[in-house]
Length: 329
Image (cartoon, rainbow, N blue to C red; front, side, top):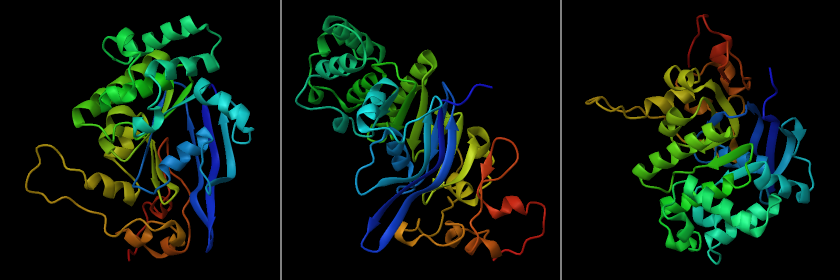
């Protein structure tokens, strides 16, 4: 078997406040194969975006990489100098963020931003770079690309700006794209178009995508595998079909039970009681245990490891005691 494109090993991100050390991403590990889409899902504050920023080398202070390793094509990249990491960003790893206006400079035309990115990473002349920029805009569905290339970001709609950002992410043929909530700020109909575009480009270019979202519908449509994060830890990871339709972790079960199903009437949606703990007050043991309807004796004191048969694993003591008689509290 070929080695994975991306390996994240025991990644830990923390920061310090007046009370001491706070762990925001806590010892998570996963892999991503070439051409694969991995969905990363969870509530706000679960650590999804921080994981993506750590891979990109874009953690803002006071956040810092406190442990673990990040390997791209077998090469460790988390300990590289910023000058080397800057060459990797754009050339080998692209990024699509939630708000396209944060990714685009309002003072420059989209053509200038595309050509500057291309010229930074590829050995092309300015004329060749401009032609490639037009081709990219055409590929992502910008109409009249040869004319619109000299437009400014504010002259595009939100959906079209996001297409420009996708063109920027693809400009230098990266192996991996980190897509952080790429559809959240868009209308539902535009969301579907953007997801379809990402799927098509991933298939045509063989690019791997780490798709960060809080939307299970997006995961179901786009991702082959999914990692469910809770309080900075992986609660469940595996085949998206199994995780979404036969979840093992009570948190994932609660997420799925809270989603309305088209055509089902009369039944009340379930909810997960309580809220995700603050990073400064994550409880011992399983971080989900104060909200879990199936908690029992070890949950409040012993942190569960990821375990399970086959591709899907979950961090739950129920896995270790499957088939036994349990006394639930």
